[in-house]
Image 1 (spheres, one colour):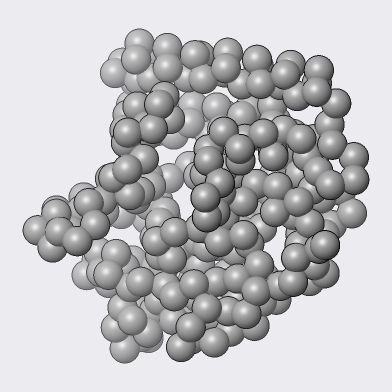
Image 2 (cartoon, one colour; image 1 turned 90 degrees about the vertical axis):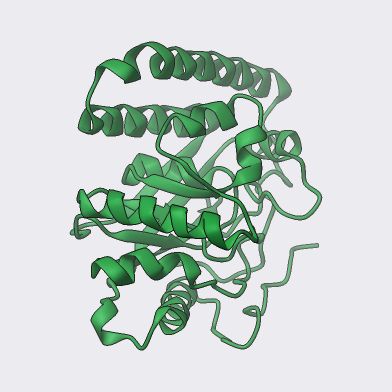
Length: 275
């Protein structure tokens, strides 16, 4: 799949979706969130892990459909129990990955406080990390290692924050440690959002001072987006010199797949925004 490297566009600049359709989609989204709450509260405690993963995947697929986001995934042959390492553009990334390959996610602790989404995340295998706490990091590493040991996927965003999709920040290697200790593969995932013409779009970008509501409004206004999830070749921990090198290799693979170039000493140079 060829990726476009033309200037980033908001996706809603030329032909924003009419307001009545946006409000209709928003109402469907609210109903879908209520449905998710009921499923998690009433059904999740009664079923096993595999069934939960299938439900999470189906729920994420429908959420994307409601928002007009079309999943384009290339994830064939992922080794079981892989640590999925992705670049981070939006809160939507979690559902994009879950729709393609359901996984437990490592997230910043602040997400737990988000209305509705925080509650759902806490009950759907999300691991919340308190920044700056070494003791808590050790506990998180043990949780990640246990999940990988059961041949389930764990996903994380090693940049630690979002970009607009036209750049990559430094990849932090600390959370790769559980995969290293367990000898599990690390699979870089390249995420990107595109408009109908295949041009990269910033409509889903949740970056800077953008609020969750503003980001949602931007996605709804776009009307149609392609969300791409592409797996790079797995990294084997035996072939690397440590977690820092593995993080650099993952960043390099994602930068190459997204055609962003690579500069390991700082952020990848961003694409120019459309005027």
